Length: 398
Image 1 (cartoon, rainbow, N blue to C red):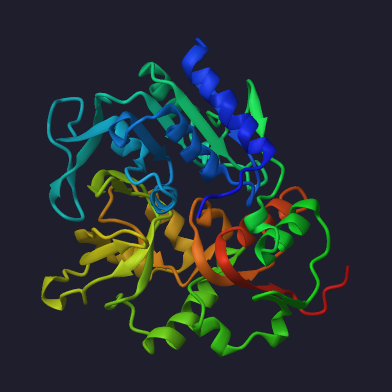
Image 2: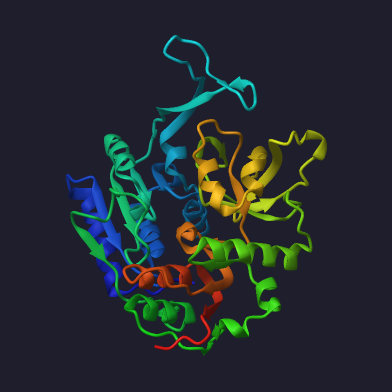
């Protein structure tokens, strides 16, 4: 079915084609909230220019976002690191040239570096969730001298960095009109109210609903893909409750089909164009073998949601996995790493969900602070594509 483009989309597509063919600038930027058809614009620009799949490099800083790009027609989308770098690993040495040894494992400590990867034949770079790209990565992309289109959604939470690379300066085109196909979407309706700071009242909205927390049931928790919330303590509590409901187990180690999230970047590990990066969510394809468990690490096969190729034999940090949330940050930043950092992902914070998209789920409204709460609620709502249950605190008065 051919999509009916809005006047805004047609204008931006034409501007982008003209820029590509005639401008000396290598950067074209546009933004728009959910429902305005940013992916439609990207695909239409590629089609109008007549570029082949080998001539474009669709990329995102966020692995989950790269998967979404594939699902929306940019089938060769990868993480930025996967497109730009070949990782190299070498043993770390001290000032005397001696190999540094990890006392915990009695093994050499390795450092990860990168060598640039040529983008042979690429004529156009496409970046989604561009607001999350650090400035240093933008500089690396700039050095390639390839025309680049960067798009994102400025209504979302700001990136947790001091200097983002895109959508902060220069000419930025803006989509504002909701596509006809999305006009009746309850998710778009609720997201617009959240972005504007308007109250969201309990009720049924098409195939979605807004309820008070006192009306939440176990069946709702069990029957949805994932839950999003604002606070880590809420996430921790929900993960315990939902995992027991869905998996009927409370053992500490993950089991087959458990839902996990990676919590620390390892750009040295790649599978099918995706890096093992912070925020990547997937399922466990094995039961960790107790005969291989040494009390320090355990191994899993990890399949990201929306992908078909798993990360195999990933060594996970046992101590990090079982520790309470108060200790996890310390272990994540420990001098000597003992394995990849994973947590259960039946519930995650809205901050870490950015770039992801789920068919359905539950969003728990929680107040963090006045400056970001509208963006927090908007971001949480727009992580879902089909339907959601929006949970407001009981006894909330507007």
